[in-house]
Length: 285
Image (tube, rainbow, N blue to C red):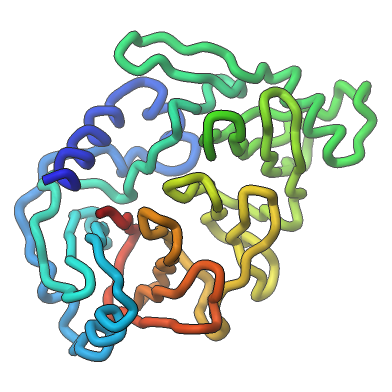
């Protein structure tokens, strides 16, 4: 019941102007919830998942994986049994993870007073540009090197992550982690690539960049809250989606054909491959 209520609350929040603005910046409007016919998860798990169930059970994993398919219909399976459970009936291409009230509007980082229809500027475009210039080693006084916030999410009460685009050509997409108005560090263009979105973990201990060209080669698009790149299991293709267990001890990476689950801090210790093709996913209690 808690999971269903949470998704319904999220769907309501998605209708607010701020959420719509952020969604428009990181992807098409196809993520907007809309009524959908009830579907079954069984065909998506057509290949026998007995080995995955056994490994998930032995590792003590629990919870619910809620995920979208290529038609943006939502499904859900329980852990460790991988049995279909009731999923929200609306359509949604990607789960709307909590942003902590932080978002991006007109190039600025704002806090939304949900329920009041107002926003408060947390970081103006001018201050954002100045902080990113310093983080990239660009002279602070070079006002021609401006940056605009594309997406912003909160990691906790003090620290938040901002995906930003340069106002000069050629466009440069960067990511900065802030505490208050100070940038703790900035990930440059070569690391960020053409990331469409940043996904925070439930407790703010990690974040991941999603999209094409993120982290050249076989590098990991996953980072700790302090900006350290986190390892991922060898041999897993570049993920299209990511979710963490509610306690962040486990990470789930979704590729075109499977979902791989592994211990967040020990990516080489155990990898469970779930034969499940998903578009995006979320992990809840």
